[in-house]
Amino acid sequence: MADELRLDELARKAGVASTTVRLYQAKGLLDAPRLQGRTGWYGEAHLTRLRLIARLQSQGYSLAGIGDLLAKWEQGRSLDAVIGVEAELDALLGDAHAIELGPAELLERFPEGSMTPNLMQRAASLRLVELTADGTVRVADRRFLDTGAALAHLGIPLDVILDEWEALVAQTDQIAGRFVYLFERYLAPDDWQMNLDTAELRNLAGTLAQLQATARQVLAAALDASIAHLGRERLGALVEKP
Image (cartoon, rainbow, N blue to C red):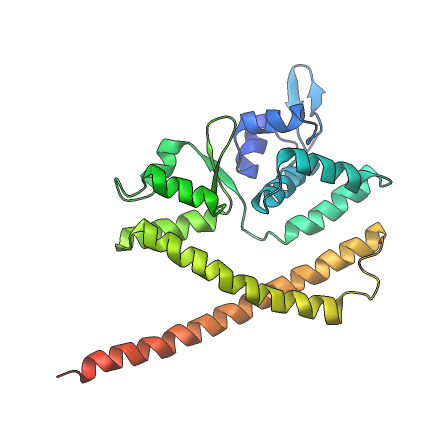
């Protein structure tokens, strides 16, 4: 069938190891593939489910907790309905998807010797990385890896980068709380916390996705303006020095 994937292709698109896909199947988190002879074929529903699992893991859910959550989610809903809502939720991820790397591959991204075991442990405590059952390292969002490595190659120590990340998250949580308040106060229906049907859930997820995109633009513009303003002040002070 068109648009179906082999195991290795599915794993690559989802940013996980092939063994992770098999693990999720063994734990009942992912449906078995369609078999054609001895070849298993996976579809869009499998990819969407893998991305949703990654999102839930990044929020601190264990695999057992994810299994319970998905089981409750699917009760009383058809498979097509569940996949449809999962696709709407997956849209909230944008281009930010978890990836899995071998330990050596991860270390190669950073200046030699900069990533110590203690720093890796701290990154794990901040939920930036996680050691998987098959020995790979799962990065919650590939942007964390790209920006962290870029800052490290500029010469900023990794412990300082982690300090700044921890401080930044505290502030972004507050900012996110303000946007979530706007969502709950003005955009969500009054009874949105009650049982909603599939169409209402999809519409609500779509509205939240639009708010997320708008919030991203506002924050980017505000940050650009702040850096430009503060940067001019700092550079101006240096120029004025005798």
